[in-house]
Length: 213
Image (tube, rainbow, N blue to C red):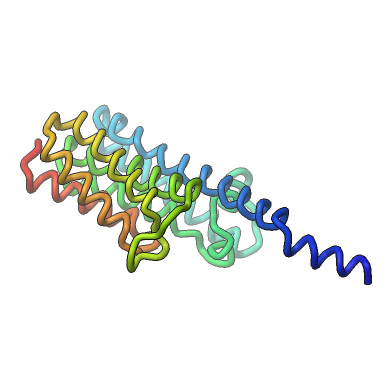
């Protein structure tokens, strides 16, 4: 009886919550580290666009194979471990789609837009969406009205990150503000894993329409 009471007390104390919080933050750090890796794609594409697209496609297929294997009970060394560490607990019972949509969004940006616009679109995905989720998880704080899953701090981090990048890439204050606002709005809309596709496609389209390049 005493052991049962101890378990109840532990489950209702801060120790239980803090453990969950640490696990959530660790997972978010791994997820967003993967997000930030796509920032290297424009550099690779500037050297060899076709080769970069092939590399992304092959990587996506290999990841899909590893996920199908995991769901069948077969572990792929390293890939499965990283997937489980980076995935949210609610996603682990099924196919973890995030890395696939991340690669698809990156490839679409390269295919649809000239490289300078695609670069800005991919940077918005890597840094804007990446910092929004990371800062939102670390700082929490008030939620956006009507978008309870999004925080003010996360959206502000997205805006600042994309604005600074767009200003550096374009050298135009007004255009950088428009691009940052676009990325922030798209990131705030709850598309789920498909924000990895919507953000680069949307930001790239705005960059082209503004004739930034």
